[in-house]
Length: 373
Image 1 (tube, rainbow, N blue to C red):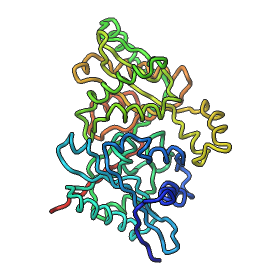
Image 2: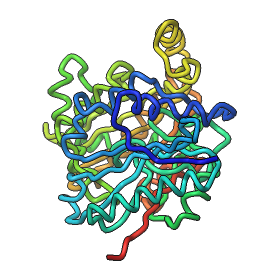
Image 3: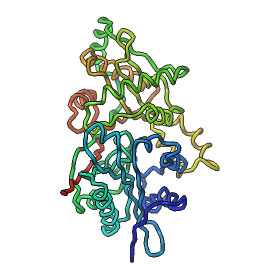
Image 4: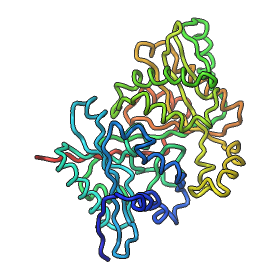
């Protein structure tokens, strides 16, 4: 069979790009189809502010009968380049049938694209940055992904590594069974509260825009030293948060303050992938009904973010975040939570999570390949 690469230029091309995964994952019971309408909006520069700070080109590989068999997004993220003083090419939204010729064509296109733009290396997969879905699943294929985490066939790693990409960093996911709050955490939080050095409260949904200013400030401060961190503009941060606003529960979105100053926040979201899995990418004609019917049946959460400004990290705010989240999960009869993603070498977070009973159950990998001039 003859394959060819084409640049996505028309609405029909983009439609093929977005719908391509359905042709690959038919036999994968753990795959969760994304909402087609959400993907259309995400890839539309008129809606997604990420495109104001980035250059994105989409490519698909088609067979001789014009069937799409692979895709890739290639990205120059100017916010990243400015923050790190380097010019890097990123790739993401990678999908391919189990054929090394197809994957090779996609990655060869990426290399050519990077060299033409004089980019020093290729990094990914990122959909479309570390502020979005990140990494290639390399361990933990037996269970579906939680909200906001990617899933892929196991053969993708072989395709990527055979082409010449090598590991840059692993991102791990932990699973924590919700049983009872450990005694050491109960007593520790009791002592912290007697010291009265900070306060923790749920987000005020009726002042959401004001609260978003707090979250944005904390995010761009607390995560700044993390590997792969890229600062987000206020507009991009707002877009990301508003995408999940409809299923935020205030008791799972906690804000810490020290003498009135924002110090950190913790966000856990219900794993609506349990619902999306049944909708096959569509809200209509019956998808919205299914969503409303099933959203309250979700029995797990993902802890998406937990960050504290550096100057407040020794006050014990993190311990109270753990305690309050665990308590709320118990009260709502939540069976388990996912904590992701966590850098594989982030011992400051991995150690307390493992002490609570969390165990690593999934691993995503970010790859890189440098180009010599």
